[in-house]
Image 1 (cartoon, rainbow, N blue to C red):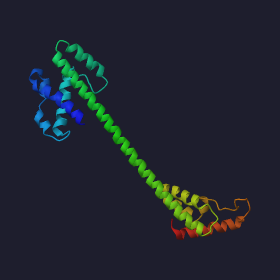
Image 2: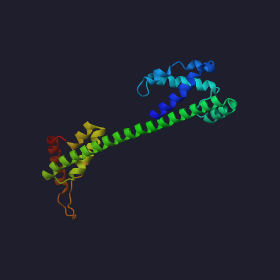
Image 3: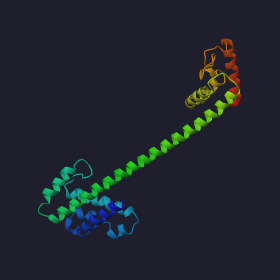
Image 4: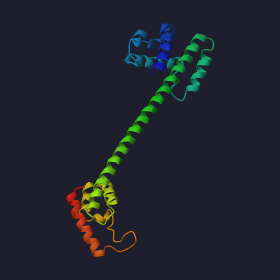
Length: 216
């Protein structure tokens, strides 16, 4: 914003030294330039002077809004209304240039802030996902080590997803009927039957007791 403040000071100081020639509009410029210069960065007095400069400018261009959708009208108003006053015409155009520069820098700054916020959110999401993967892997390994015939990673992953929506219900399902999260495997990868329906139900019940002790 150094470039913006430099342009602002140039315009403000020029108007300030001739404010007595601007009638009521000049009365807006009540902040002394040295007060602005005494501040570090874009201080309180600079912000106040900036608002007063805009008020003065708006009055000089017949109430038109240079910061809105009346930019073209403002330029036309200055070109026509001050065509016989080159000093004021050029100074007003300098003022327009300052307002545009300031707006551009503010937009860029907002975009940077939004980008940084997006990065922060993404990093949080990635961190949560990484932590969740560790949890899934850790508990899945314990289920596999116990020898249960179930897709352990799918079971833990689906449990965690449901837990985010309704923790109590997810825990109830996990400790009574975990097969809802991942079906008990009744066939091996070659299609050979490894568990009968009754054995699968028994496996599901044993798994439920195991998971209740495991406390996911």
